[in-house]
Length: 263
View 1 (cartoon, rainbow, N blue to C red):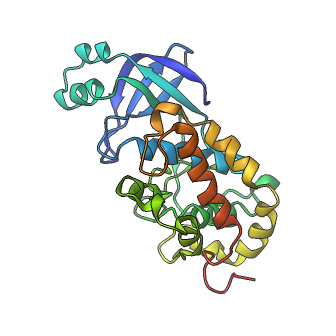
View 2: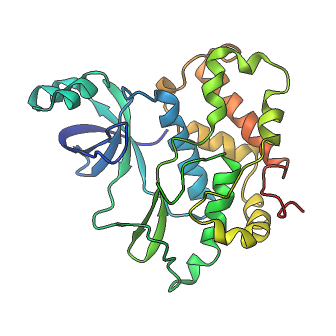
View 3: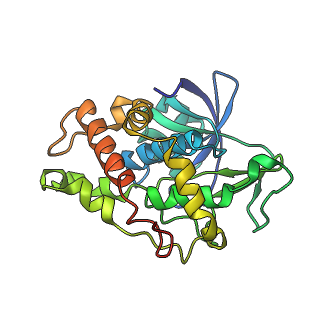
């Protein structure tokens, strides 16, 4: 599982998004952007953050370190903001912590090219978002940071949309992973859409790094308590297996790559 640390202080809310993440300090002396389990989007958003973030790491993209933040709602007693108090009180237990990158800049369209390691990074981000069906990396909300001359990918809660239908019984329907595998992805609104020409090379390079065992390793990083039982997967192990089957099925196809890229 991702490392667990305890929150020692709530610093300030970050009001850029609708879920009201907050900056917190922890007992490992780290500072983290906390994404709360009690926010409106629910626990599956935290699962998507871990799964896609760890996949990004495995395919060579830079993304902040993730931890599970153990939150004691007693911290809420010291907060004057009632909205923050309510969120802290609704989020006891493990929340998601994203390592804070001090001094990072939001992406302005300028790709870093000074380091050879950055070659192909734009196409790799496109590939990751296509593979995980991420709809939230547009110019309105790039979810990219520039830090120490490198591009960093953040905020993946909008990916893996298929799991939001699991509570309604979609896992019980035959062929559910295959249906996700065949779902196309539209790059027209993507902030890095101009790098689509490199997708074919990125696809060949990245596929060599992924398989079912890698997906299983990634799902092992997710805390059990975030893996809510759903019809057809009533235990954390069964929910993990469902994610693995969906990701493995998508990797077996290329139908989701944008038109003109499919080999």
